[in-house]
Image 1 (tube, rainbow, N blue to C red):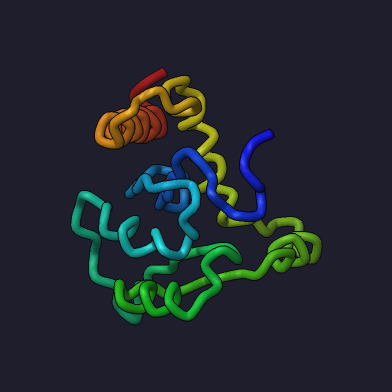
Image 2: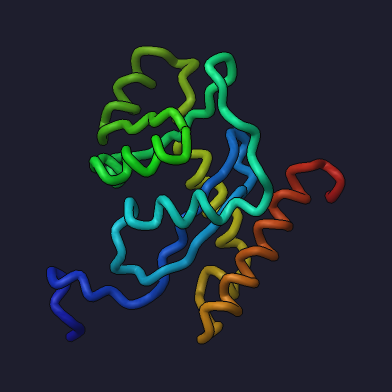
Length: 154
């Protein structure tokens, strides 16, 4: 028997990933598996390596998040970085999809990118003991995903 599952003392790592609308990774942060998602929101946004264009009224920048980010602190973080928050509760997206067959669930793009990252065995099962080595592997895998999405690689 292992530890009590209700004490949330999970072992392992949690990846917080930010992608664009096509699933190209923009930023990634790794922390302990027992951290709440909304606590990693600020560091994930800050991990974007390139400067992003300033949002304007004509061209706002939305940030789609799921129920795990439905907290006042997460909303404040999103507004601090000048994103327009799109935080949906559980089940709301499925109801919208049933009404309109053309509707595409936005946060599934991130889940698909996680699946692409999990194709690499050393990321799916974390063998690296040092966090820096694991983050380096994640950055390399993110670069591969972006390169493959560009169409330059078969």
